[in-house]
Length: 232
Image 1 (cartoon, rainbow, N blue to C red):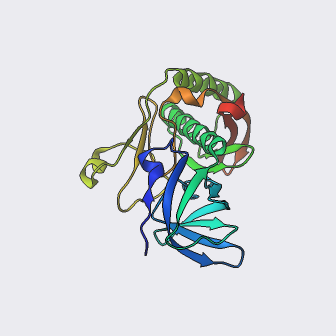
Image 2 (cartoon, one colour):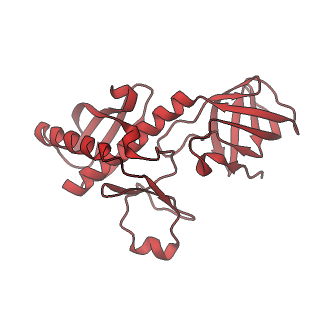
């Protein structure tokens, strides 16, 4: 198994990088390329993967399978060759805005009402958040007002890797039982959550959070929302 250095965890704002092609496997459609290091985020944690280019090859999606970071391309790349990688930054930054905004909304709702986020989907046009409790329109309007005020406080988003002992005493949100190294994303005063996704450095970069609709769903509610440039 080839271990790829994950540049997106070292610097989430890295848009371009140079890497060596370690493997190139032919697939039914296109190729699966493994690099020695990469800034391409793979699909996971409710967040879609990055897309972009490796040299003159298009990267259409990125997945992690059995610990390997697979870049799916439309062209073969020569093993041992150096390639210039470029991620679609507008798309990545949009996903960072959406994901960080969702954390803030889920954190405030958990704090105010004790409800858990039991489902999260980041689509190309809208985010949906499923909660295991009921809210009314007045409560939703109050949450939207409060979350935007916290966005504008421009707090730093803090990412840590606590030890197993530290995790035992840490109050954090998680949708599943976690094993191995846990990555904690904290928005001070608003949310603490286990998450593998990419996030903005400060909440002010989210800009704006807008709720679009709310429906009753599986004994709770499903909120549709947008953040950042999409909300504007």
